[in-house]
Length: 245
Image 1: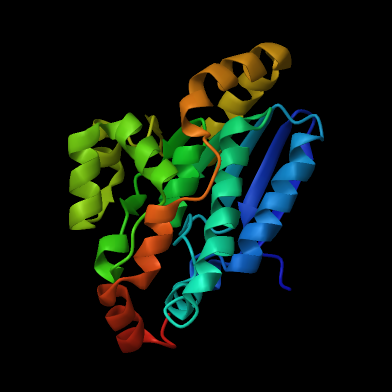
Image 2: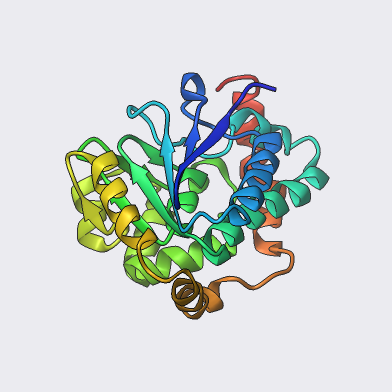
């Protein structure tokens, strides 16, 4: 398999990069598993701050690969392993011992937004855009990600983004709380912040993270998300778009 995600480290600061820019860093099911395995390795490597970024600043992530999502209309039973793989990544980002920073210099959509929300801190550049489009496809969004969204932006703004599936720019994302910081040089801002975090007590940070994220890390099947792959609207969408990216 091609290297869709790579990671490197410099002392206590790690960098995990998406490297499938030709497909807007869309993640296939196998890629979610690879990402989870990589996060497991990083969690044991003594990294205290981890920057999630793209090898191509023109795009952060389009989320899950639409071709594979559409295939779930034929085999809805495959939705469960897909959902579990995604959920595990979000839990690792939220519950891992390292502080995670999302460096969002370009478009960030669908499950890409979920990855960003699972991170502890989100930094966006002026060219970043955001959308959560499941309502266009007749499917749902994972419950944990919906809770993260509502916690960040409030229930009203969460409802607007989920129900309209509209795209917002970085300035609006910052205004409503979806991102924490805006900077023209996202990479430099994240690196500076990561180095400050890495200089602090790792034990203290682990305790603080546990207190902040405890309500978002419930385990178990996400039935409402799985039910989304059985709706008539999704089956019609998949039938119209099968084979297209």
